[in-house]
Image (cartoon, rainbow, N blue to C red; front, top):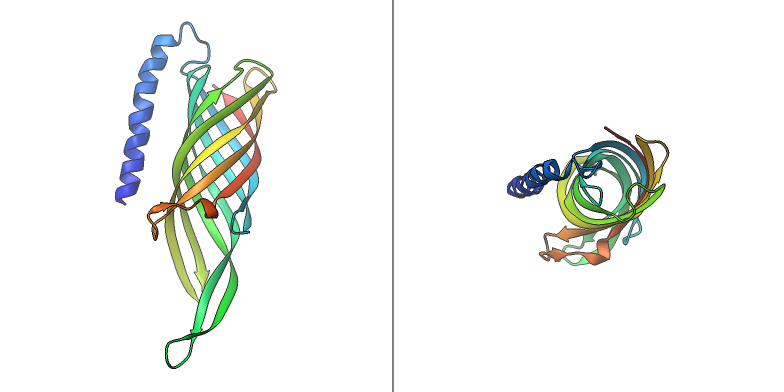
Length: 201
């Protein structure tokens, strides 16, 4: 809970000065202070071999034509392999059992996006971000859940369809935080990819 409060406070701290700054540049920059409502669908694969699908909805706020911030959430699911152990009477492991289960996930992500060719028909973008996943699953008749924090880098291209509507094709490379080792687990990375559409207002 404490980490959630910290993440939320950082998000507010980042977006508040952005809104103030955007008001100053709005008259010179037609993108400043604009909002985009977006929807996306795609899949992902992880360094541990699991694959899944994800549906997201989010809002993007333009500070200026070159920089925006985004806040997204959604729902997804993926296959996950769980290991359990069988012990003998002396407490020694005699068998390792591997079970495949379905895991549900709700992400909450905040990103800062840099737009390379704003206003062009094809506009590449790139940016860092962070957030967390709320995960839950059933295993051996028990319901379990967890919160996993992470950082990520995203990149792709925005294809302008009309004055108000655009499509995105992008990739996101995410590295989770491992509480057991108290460090980022690069071997547990996951790569998400997908197609999204957004309406600017």
